[in-house]
Length: 92
Image (cartoon, rainbow, N blue to C red; front, top):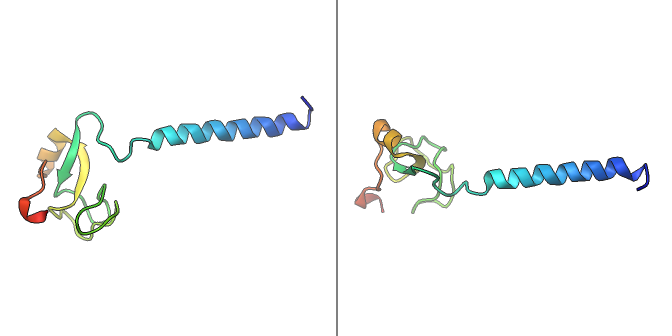
C-alpha cells in the first residue's frame, strides 16, 4: 500500500467503525427494553418518548404530566412517580 494512502485509509476505517457503533447504540431507541413500560402521565413538557393522538413526535408534549403523554420507565419507577401503565380511556 502506498505510504500516502495509509493514513487516509486508517481515518476512513476509524470513521466507519465509529458510525457502526453509533448506529448500534440508537438501534432500539423506540422500543422498550427489559422491564421498561410506557409510563403515562409522568413526561415533562418536551420530554415525552413518542407520538400520541395529538402529535406525531417525541419531545412534542406541551404540558407537564399530561395523562396522554408517556415515557419509557421501569414499571416499579413508573408507579413510584405516580404514573400509569395504561392510558386513561378518555385520553385515547
